Image (tube, rainbow, N blue to C red; front, side, top):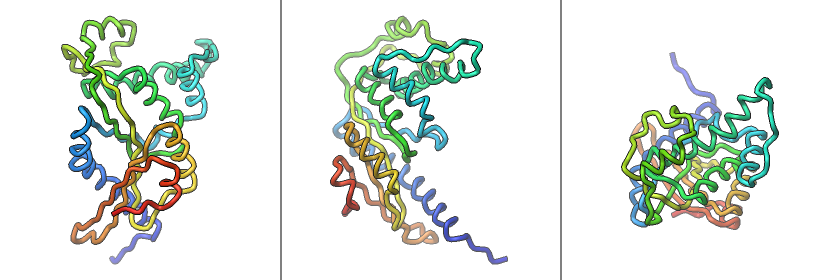
Length: 236
């Protein structure tokens, strides 16, 4: 039986192909190039249902960053577990992203990582962390001492090293578009806010030449200013 996808269905498939293609491209091309100037580079691909955060989650994380008090919630309140998950587990989850790569973030890098979560109102196709050693290491003894009150389950499976290099660095948001598609209005507004806060957008454009022949073109551009974002990037 002859069957065809609806146009919008086929566009979705193109987008999925483009996203997976760019992931391979980043691991085999982009990251090796970035490692010429950075000590550690890794990509994180958030789950589609994890970003953007709920507005309450954003408020609580923002209050944590600013050092203000979060609302006191009774343990009998059904929202207690929800609040605790945001206040405790989300920041720990962010720290684990670094620990699993064998590094420990500076306070500034850690805050920038959480702040990006607060700023994101759209779901990016990934996040790249470009890290440099600060010249200081955190010993495993000091690590265990500093986090002795944390739930041990948070670090299950973590290979405990003699020390963790303390790193600072930069964070980029990945956005992938296929063929003629471009940023939506919501993406332009949100990415503009993200750029104003010191982050950059690594934009990938994928032209699908032939699915049968497995032929594609990938263009890559780093967008770091609002002017670059407002006009379609001229990529060569």
